[in-house]
Image 1 (tube, rainbow, N blue to C red):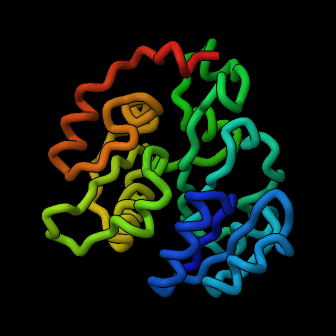
Image 2 (cartoon, rainbow, N blue to C red):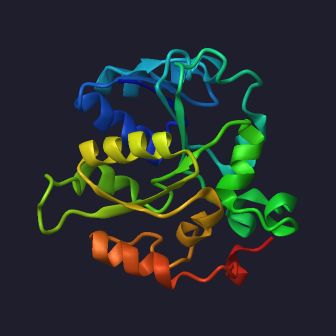
Length: 220
């Protein structure tokens, strides 16, 4: 599968490592340019590209950059993506720690991924936002393993959600359908499922226990 990854930090870098190891054709970009990705490219065989080129031909595009930087992504980013492509949003809103106050979240009450969707102009599937980056490398397990972790996946596009869940399962994790993007507050920071290392039952229970009230520490 052709996969474009925008952001080569902890999550983006480790997804690049695992997805290339599984045989996927991965293009990876960051804000500093392809020359800064030479070590990752040499390690993994991924193709370093500019952000504007990252989605070219991609069936899945992973956006894994700081929340506040999403509006800065280039116009026409997805113009050359594959037909029927899917966007994965791994982002989280950290108003006090990094992002400052975002009016769409604070005043309109948008979920983080609904806000991201509006900036991108394309539906997103929310996944990996509460996953420890190192777990992508170290905690993958074969299907049926008793210690296999489950990840929540939210989105309105059922075909896209199906594709993302299949990819996550290929990576070595179970998945739980966390509802639509307007339900994705259930997996935002400081909810019970955020950072949870449990199986399907534990993740399902944690999603059900989430509160829609944004914690004080995550308000702008």
